[in-house]
Image (tube, rainbow, N blue to C red; front, side, top):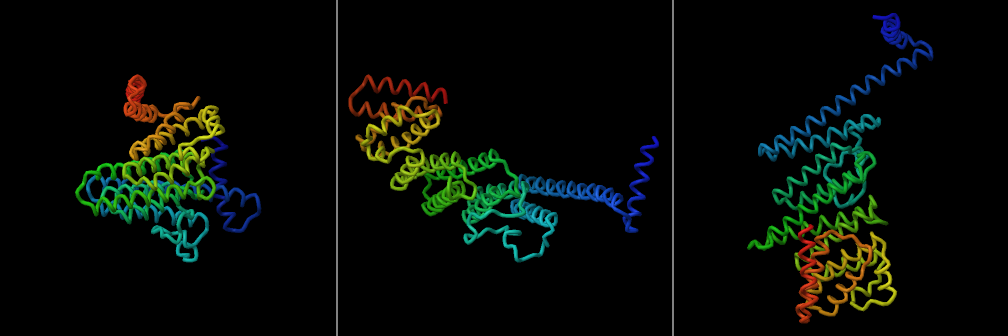
Length: 357
């Protein structure tokens, strides 16, 4: 061992002795470094404990021990909150801070960020929501999904926007699949509960990410959620609610609401043809919802107006499936009007778009 290494080792020990004896400033600085190392070790141990508990819970879930898995996921949340409170110098039994240990969200705290919850809490609550959806425990699913949104919106959680968007979209897709799978069910009570669950989940999401009033404003995610919600309402045959969603989408994208009435003005037509790539894409995505709605309502005038507006967009880059849907329903519209050449072209383009999708 070199002389310098001997010195460093001896300095650490003597520094601890000097600190105990109340020595001067230079020794205190060195002792602070020693304490930092100890704190970092404690933090690492806490992180390992959280990780182990989380994966133990996933193991219990995979083994079919669902009740045990729920309790272990909840323990991950409690552990992380206690660790973060301790690190922040807050007493773990402090009842004055309602958000600190709020593992059971209530409507009175609707969409208020949760403090002291970190990334492991986010992961654990996300798994709890999945378990509730799997067992069709609708009330618990809504409660924990609300908690998930509140954790995601908290600076303490340090969840990246991409991770939040991915997690939210995954949950919305799971809820939509529940509705689609129950569409042919003879159990009307179960179907009604699932539809109520879906609407609660979407309402919470739209409130959380609203561009101006949400606790985590995200215009892109709010718009995409509205599109998903509109598609779900179409599948549920909720035409009145669907029209309200379409109106919100039109207003948010800067389009005049007269497009909903099928009587676009010259200014609104110019807005569509001169749209940017993003704006044009939004026009086509909204039009896809309108075309489905008016096709179901057999409102030929509005259907034709929405179809021609979508086809007049320049620069829009919608998903191929969206474009295929517009072209397919446009082809059916042409068929009903006995415009067979236009129908043939629309169906051919729809086939190509579906193939691309």
